Image 1 (cartoon, rainbow, N blue to C red):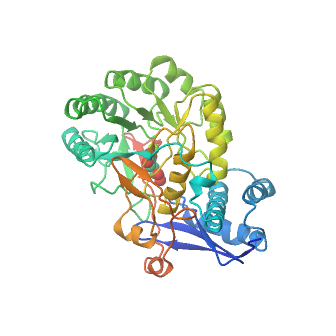
Image 2 (cartoon, rainbow, N blue to C red):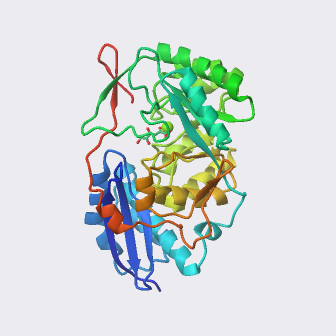
Length: 403
Ligand code: KDG
Ligand code: MG
């Protein structure tokens, strides 16, 4: 049996921070897992270094399920983003090892390909509707079948989803949280105008998505969903903070715009009520923050029973290791919907050489054994950790709001 002989975390900042777990085995095979939790990176590193790695040494690397259960049940303190990101990193690394030893890409171990490739959506954004539509046109020209539209709200600086750089979106760009201002009313006026402009310019073939980023009250979300209906959005994401899952009943009563939720969920228990009550259409839990491939498959299995499809989070704060793992999952799972794809910078791609590739609006994980991604430790060492936080949002009178 391949025994786990060593494991360590590697923190690198090729433009943004990433935490990677590397597990080595007695067979000479190693695996990698992503443990990045944006703005709280060092907490997951400590959880792994101080509490998980010592328990891994000597275990059979093939026992992916048992090690998952051991870390989840054995901690006594269950769930939470730090714990579940740490477990996820171990799980990804073990699937990577299993694939390498079997000589198969991980998607083959998950049951094989259920489709030719993974439909992804890119991020079109701009300060104005015209800029956003122009960016969406570029994505369409590059072959994307789906694109997310985010635009600036007139009079407000630093609207969520609007990037300084057209291709790379990185909100965690300050040593301490920057403060942005928010008001729902002008936002709710501008988004339907954006979708009207986009449909006129791009036609009806391309899927259009939008992320509300937890900003609205339930009745406001119902209104926005209704106002967007004529433009047939693929989804409206995170309309309200999902701690209050009953809010989704209210939103559902008012709109047929499909709803996507779950990028900040970290276990099947966060997803269960929304799925079983058919209050969402897409579940966005992702490999890194929701306990790895092993746990995400369980979430997808539950979702499939209720006609809910997957739409994994894929922001740049998830490393190429996470993206690779997501693609193996996406390719194999029967109820796949769409995968978010924000391109990483050239520096990040150099630190994490990978086999996945984009063609015609689809990503494919490639045929390399395991996850098909690695970390170049020498390159990683050139980019030391830099503290960086996500912004916060306040209403115009100074009241703290959901970012
Ligand atoms: O770290 C926070 C980001 O991952 C998040 O703001 C991105 O909402 C997001 C998305 O849909 O990609
Ligand atoms: Mg989002």
